[in-house]
Image 1 (cartoon, helix red, strand yellow):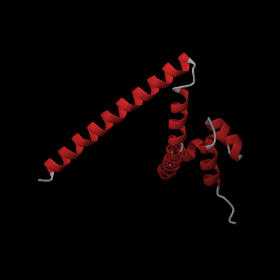
Image 2 (cartoon, rainbow, N blue to C red):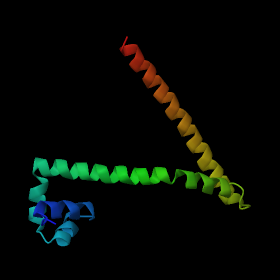
Image 3 (cartoon, rainbow, N blue to C red):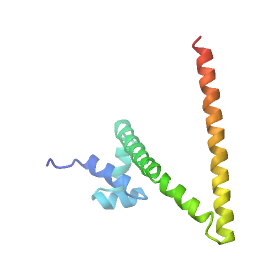
Length: 118
């Protein structure tokens, strides 16, 4: 396996750290070096792409859990604890309304796009 470059080490450390200082410590580079890398347009682009990929992975994980989350909400809707049942009902209603609003917006956008292609 090839040895990682300092930029690769910095990128990995930045993705897993809460601050520049923590990232510098994690990868064994100085904070000045990390800041110098962050001033480099190519490095910043690579860092942004890596962060975007990380968020997309997390979103995918959350999407895989939605069926379990819906099952949990359904179970808690009838758990005989009024406070939990009311909060669960509120969550279900809020998300149902958001879903309808999103579908409506997507329908409107599709109509606009179709009108513009004519």
